[in-house]
Image 1 (cartoon, rainbow over the protein chains, first blue to last red):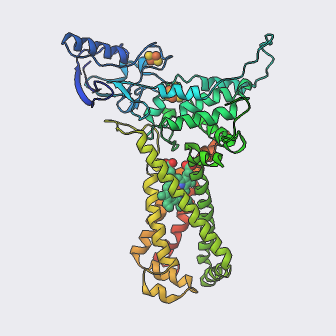
Image 2: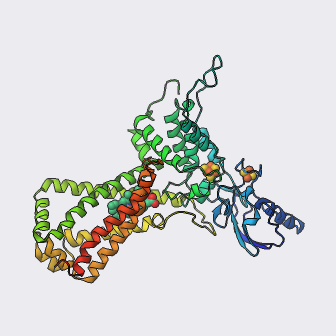
Image 3: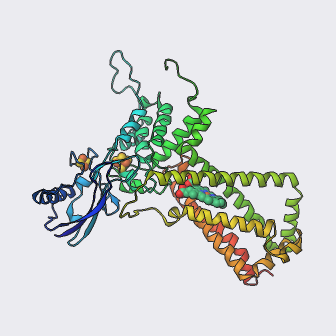
Length: 258
Length: 221
Ligand code: HEM
Ligand code: SF4
Ligand code: FES
């Protein structure tokens, strides 16, 4: 099939970008979206033009690097699917396809469709450590965890940090991501000692990075390839408010901190 | 008190102030409607209620000051958050589709700001009575007559009805959304939480609208 592509081209972080139109004359329905772009790039290279830069790594929906806004929907039209797992059978002959990078102040563009998502790494770093005691190895099963908590923690832990939640949100809010990261530890007994501090620090870092604020439209949940639930955002709000009111005093250093 | 400053300045903290002040305003709106509906009990019922309210002097003023402060906080924090949100996406998408955001949720700023202009008009109209000499001439004792007189003008009646559509729209999203903001999202309660906005929002709007509508139809005269 034939497609008309409108792709964001931007030389580097400092230059101005614009939408450029390309024809993709020979697209097979079996291709993945990224394979389709590979073919377009081969054509560009053959013509001596600069290929379109886009992020990808695993191409099997686990690494979270393929980040494309496709026709105004993060990761494209298929729910619960990353761009790399999206197949061209979702499109039909003659379709126009808009391909843009994630747009957020906190995700500066590196080149074309590639954005810098290290703000996410800094949010995770702000979460700090989980206490692990040394000594003789414990029996693996001696920490009782309810089935519900274990399931929920696993659901939250599925987040691959792709950033689609930020891209889809009209406020470029990172609350779905941050809440998933706060919750997968906060739901487990191992995550309790630092639970309040973690919620405080991660939310603070999220704000510092310049992400927006949640207005509860839940666009994030709709595009998340791992279908992370906005229930975790409510959980983060609760944890954060609880930690703010009852938790550690930011004006006081904990013993050992300098 | 650095913890308080930190909380209020945070995304989650600021939004929870929006939710709490929103909830407080809903509490006021429910009380206000209950009082207003006394108009259907005839002139004595509503005029008696108005006289009773005014006899509470200090209490009434306390409530008024509190309400203005709550509304001010609501507006301050929504505007602050909204500006931060705009700043978080400096370059718009060439193409953006919504997948599930409701109409009400997308028009919160508009329905809020229009509600604000309505509230200012409403205060000028019924509280300060500066919009027409006829109403000013009635004095503070005959609320019933003031309503009949005001809503016999179709322009005024339609303005009030339109404002209530906006309030209903604002609460359609807001009343459900505030639970999520305050951390309550549980499959046991979600069916109630999801319907409370549309249901209570519409009921409140319909309740207020019933007064100008009844006067226009001549049911109240
Ligand atoms: C006076 C002018 C008003 C303005 C400018 C205003 C503006 C806003 C805005 C911008 C939001 C945030 C919407 C979002 O998250 O997308 C909001 C939320 C809300 N508003 Fe208002 N509003 C006003 C009046 C009212 C009134 C009169 C009520 C109640 C009777 C009310 C109840 C609420 C509630 C319950 C929320 C939801 C909070 C949440 O999502 O957690 N607002 N308002
Ligand atoms: S919450 Fe979902 S959309 Fe957001 S970063 Fe994680 S996997 Fe991606
Ligand atoms: S390339 Fe790894 S998730 Fe798509």
